[in-house]
Amino acid sequence: MSAPVSANSTAKLDRCSLPDAGGHFGPYGGVFVPETLMTALDELGAAYATAKADPAFQAELRFHLKEFAGRPTELYLAERLTAHCGGAKIYLKREDLLHTGAHKINNALGQALLARRMEKKRVIAETGAGQHGVATAAVCAKFGFECVIYMGAVDMERQALNVFRMRLMGAEVRGVEAGQQTLKEAINEAMRDWVTNVRGTHYILGSALGAHPYPMMVRDFHRVIGMEAKVQILAREGRLPDEIVACVGGGSNAMGIFFEFLEEPGVQLIGVEAGGRGLARGDHAARFEGGKLGVLQGCKTYILQNPDGQIELTHSVSAGLDYAAIGPEHALYRDRGRIQYAYACDDEVLEAFQLCSRLEGIIPALESTHALVHGLKRARTLPKDKVIVVNLSGRGDKDVNQVAKILGVKL
Ligand SMILES: *Cc1c(COP(=O)(O)O)cnc(C)c1O
Image 1 (cartoon, rainbow, N blue to C red):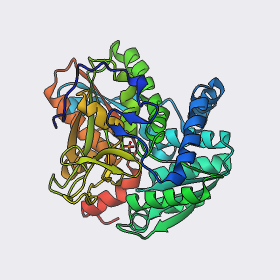
Image 2 (cartoon, rainbow, N blue to C red):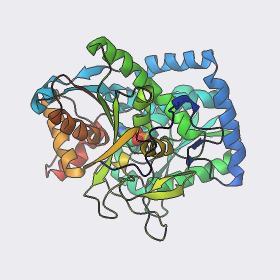
Image 3 (cartoon, rainbow, N blue to C red):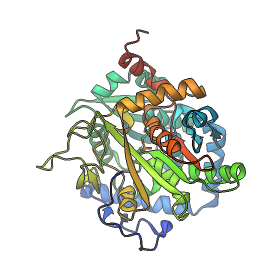
Image 4 (cartoon, helix red, strand yellow):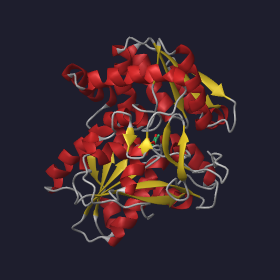
């Protein structure tokens, strides 16, 4: 595990005071966008503040999370994985059971309801692997928004099935052919669209990233994961877990499950980044292992960059963790020593992907499997009376083609 840059564990922790009015999580976060977007972000921040405080908005969101997305999700005791490791009990928070297959729908629903309140008729979003695009297309179909999804041309080819899903649900998918033709370029293109069409368009950003208010708002829409998990573990075990493990791409599923436990010092929180092929430059997406402070796509945070400050290429077997920047709130809690960070490599992930499938009858998303790898390692070293919760952020159906190819299986 990596050491914090400047441990400051004596600072009083008040999770609800973050971010400040300017969107700062300590030295991280903020608003780094062209002038033309400032008005839109201010308008969004104000609309969100009103909605957040409105019981009718919260009730409506709860209703759709239950009826459309399938909440609450189970907290499932993985008995055979637990027996296999021979140590701590392993629980899985089953976000994989949600409609469209991952936690992303929590945020997509929240932002769609907000867009409706703001009387926007058109929604845009970026997507990498396609999971956020699919969740956004689904909520746009449900609420009758015109929907445009930006996706790198390379990703469109790799994730052809998700492109078809989005189109089935009425979304227009626009390929982006700039640069590496992946997620980073898709975000640039979505921001460009937003600048041009800001009056009638809402941009549903898909992770706890970007300019304020996005990191805060996306985190808030995922807090339900941790709130449910807390009630569920108290009912099952009569106490809080010893450790909670979640994978970190931009950081939304992790902040979602961690937030409710930040002020519970007995609960260790661990975020797991993508170690890819190992920690050589360009081979991974572990921003806390070799990343430096910088600004990317709206916020200040840890970023993988070369010595000239150019954004570094990244690699991970899981597209959802394959991004050069990490959400700003994570950077602050790492400094403070409140959240620890580890990484899992592609080969360990492929092994755990098969193990979980075989022992539990659950095929996890490759992203979520990063958390599982670390959870299994911890379970082996801890005694049987300890309890670990792993956030299973999504299901692996989207990954089976890719895994078959890697394993040399012809379908
Ligand atoms: C998108 C995605 C992630 C990574 O995003 P976060 O914002 O870090 O949660 C993780 N797991 C799954 C299943 C995803 O689809």
